[in-house]
Amino acid sequence: MSHPCRPTFDPVLPARTIERLSARPDRLIPQAKGPPGRPTWRESALALSLGCTTAAALALLVNPLVLPLSILLCLGTTAFVLGLVAYRNGTTDDWADLVMHSFWALPLSVVGVLGAQVALDQVLGPLGTVLPGDPSLAALYLTSAVVGGGAIMRPGMAARLSAENHDRYVLPEDFGRPSSYATRREEPEAHLFARLQQATDRVEEGRRVLGDSFDATHTLPLLKEEEWRLAKELLRLRTLRRELLQRRKNAVSDQVTQALAPQNEAVTRAHKAISARVDALAAYGERVHAAVTAHREWEQCQEIADRAGDYADLALNSGQDPVRTDELDSSLLSVQAAHTVREELVQEAVAAGSSLSDALRSGPRGQQQDESPDT
Image 1 (cartoon, rainbow, N blue to C red):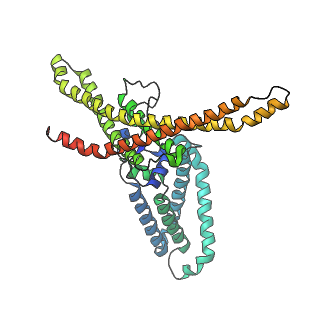
Image 2 (image 1 turned 60 degrees about the vertical axis):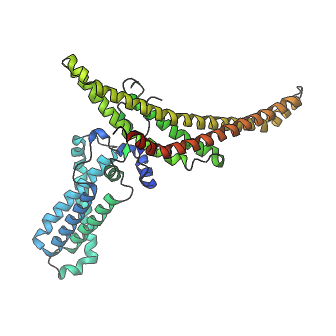
Image 3 (image 1 turned 90 degrees about the vertical axis):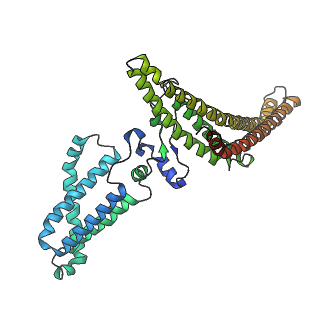
């Protein structure tokens, strides 16, 4: 374990949003890229809907614009097809590939638009005698407004969700190189955050494996809140630490280096304080992990004991000496011992979780009280 391995989300986000964003981590935006630019996805959906609706009204009321609007719709359909090709990222890597794909996308779009117009003329033809424009073309533009806006605003639009909530998650890439060769000295915040993530993952595993005997209903939400809080603090600490390292590197004299001493001390104290908080959470994760290991040990010993009779029959039928009763009893004793250890470790984990929950609930308030005299 040397680097964070998954995104961390603000627990305030709806569970469904977190689930959708977790399923598409490739669509999440690293902090280094900054906030998404304008227009936003909602503004784009609104502009698309208004533009298509306006074009539908013009196509219905202004006959000279029917041909230009038809050409515009063909080009828009071509751009949509090329956008799908680029979004899937299966057959294109750059703009040159998109240009090559346009040679089949453009004719296909023209055939599709004209075919749809011919089909709609069979239904909307009578309106053409009353209105000066083309009702079928107007219907296609209205359909584009509804389908385009709905596609952008659909609940599972990962790109839109990641842009709208770009400040509500932290990625492994935000802590530098997400690989094993980023050493603890190079990326100390990444290693601290990896330990914190491991603690949360172990509690999640304990709730899943241990079942009703391990109640993490109160501890796990607090642990996720602390993971998110520490993620933001570690990111800020990493930014200041790297800025300080750069200033020390660019220092032109010892006087400049000495002037940086208070900042260096502040970074060191912050790192120690966060490390202590991470150590407490990691220790709880280790207790839960020990309980999970004991539970699996008990399950495996139980499986061995359940199959002991079959192996005894095998030894008897093969003409060998039958398995002694004391050897079968030893299997049962192993099961009982493993179960006892399992129960003890689970109880210790539950007690540790209660203590940790109390500490996390009172921690921020207590820290504010301790820091108030200094301020």
